[in-house]
Length: 124
Image: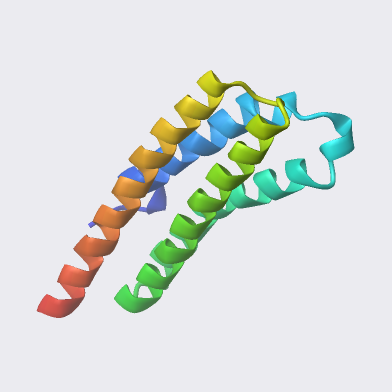
């Protein structure tokens, strides 16, 4: 079993995505977006790792899965906000492409962990 949530591959991938967002998107947004897009992207990107951690801490399969689904939703939200940033020319298409790659990796790992937990739940 995992020592803590930091050892989960899905948490590591989401943390990498969160860091990329902070360094390559949030820093590009204008001051006029501080309480709008900036705030929304920041909260959503913090949410995926926080939900993975909270689910891990619950120690029950169903609750853990519920929080992983919340994390997956926040990952999708960041993509939507990134598309908005591209539409307003706050980021370029290369940055969006990197975000898409990190989102795909994160989503696959979250989905894999959900499958793992569902299988464990059904065998116990």
